[in-house]
Image 1 (cartoon, rainbow, N blue to C red):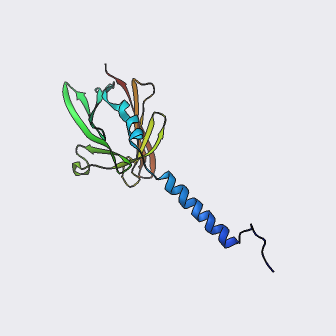
Image 2: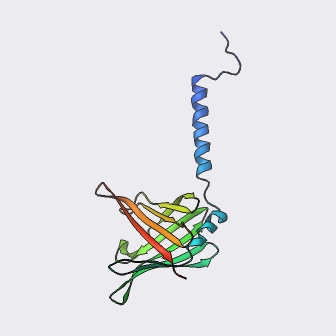
Image 3: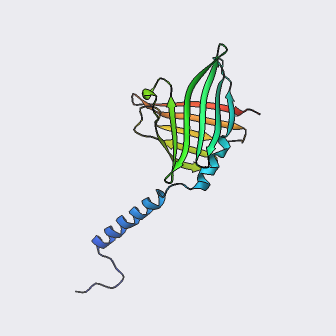
Length: 168
């Protein structure tokens, strides 16, 4: 008995599905461009979050066409307390958010990869990090910065918001 042209066997169909899924995965993981990276330029400047325990700040500068540098700190009893420094950079089509938090991780960078851009919202992830596993930045409206960290601690979900206003 002969098969009609145009029909695939089950094995050929499965092979075709695997190839389609693999190519879709490759397209999704192509990486980010300089144009994508430029969308992060909204981060440049100084940002303030008012808190009862002392105001918190983030200050960002453009270091090069492919890198931003940031520092977060708080004012406590008139003293400036540095919390972390951050490099945000484009390398080999990856956008990396690399904080160094003082007193943690032997003060070494922890790398978070940009996983999604949705308008003016950016989500970075490192599923292997203890906490956080995700860091988000949203610039809505342009003079506001909503940053957050989230993940799990002891198998319990945790989410912390940081809502900043841009300093003039």
